[in-house]
Length: 119
Image 1 (spheres, rainbow, N blue to C red):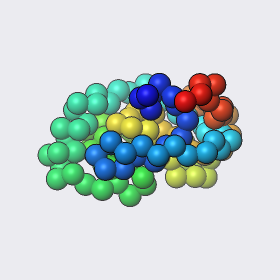
Image 2 (cartoon, rainbow, N blue to C red):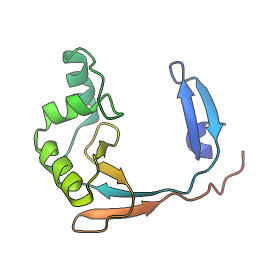
Image 3 (cartoon, rainbow, N blue to C red):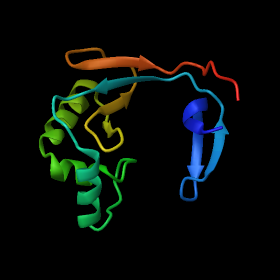
């Protein structure tokens, strides 16, 4: 069964073909969804143009996304200032997140929940 249908946590290796399920962890995150867009194809294209850089904070697409949409830096820094933590970019952007509960303007607190689907 496809992982996206099962959900939960997993470690993916190889070129995405090896999926190892991981146990559930109760965690809380704060998301900041800025009013700017990051078109996924454009972010990947910029990443290719930049020589496929490695991101310093867990997301290799971050350098390309902030190069393409410089306003993302302001939103990242705003969340970092409000929380005292270094935000991470989700996917190709534009959502930033930190672990922990930091409610506030433009931020949404979310919690992980156990999967209700059995595999």
